[in-house]
Image 1 (cartoon, one colour):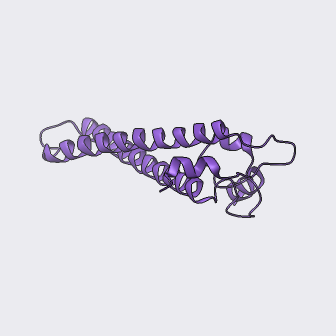
Image 2: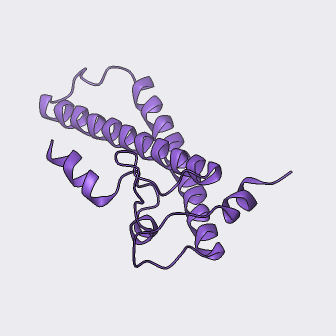
Length: 140
């Protein structure tokens, strides 16, 4: 049976014109980065959820407190929930990138189907769009 890491190392990843082909070591490094990011984000999410659960179990936040303190506390809670949601989104993107790497679809733009580019993927391994398509999407 071929492991995911060995399978990913045998995959030929696309490059932009003028870029050097991916080496086995570079593919392995990108895969290791993705796996490490998944582990790190999973731990971050678990810790944040534990913290949020503890705050929710502390009871009503407004009884006998200054309204400004309650507002600040609610603002902090909103910020933590927003950061947690963002981390979950990044985790999903990273898991998708790892799946694509293991299945041979990594490195192609999800919008136009052209190569994303080796340098872009080395800088941002969970990228799913080439620079041009990403810029168009952000303008909308």
